[in-house]
Image (cartoon, rainbow, N blue to C red; front, side, top):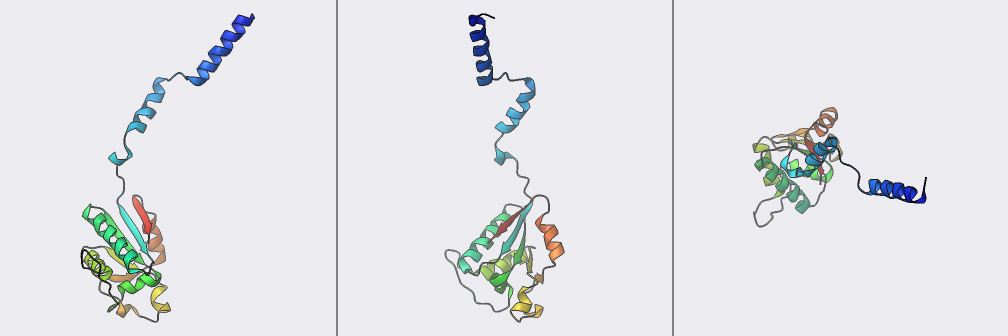
Length: 160
């Protein structure tokens, strides 16, 4: 093979690497990738695990949960640790501006809209409380059921 032929073959090889030939099979992949991700929403709802004792964090978690309901998606809430106190009758309330509501008020409104709210099964016995001290609409979580709900298709998990 002549020196000219070797250089031409090498150049053709390098160009082929730099500019691969696109086939018809590649087009659907390119077309699918071009669609914006926001055009398809497969989310059915949220599973919110609230553990933080800070009232402002609790408030934001419940504000976002309320907005999720407003947008037609489902919400389920699990209260664990210090956040479990939200579910106790006569718990201390902190009011927040600009809506002049407390996390307990938002939690009650979510319950009234059908949101399932449960407390961690470890919460009550470890704060020396009983189920009778929970506000209406709050139940004690069953770990196998919670695990199933958390991994359900279309459910996004949020922790606060």
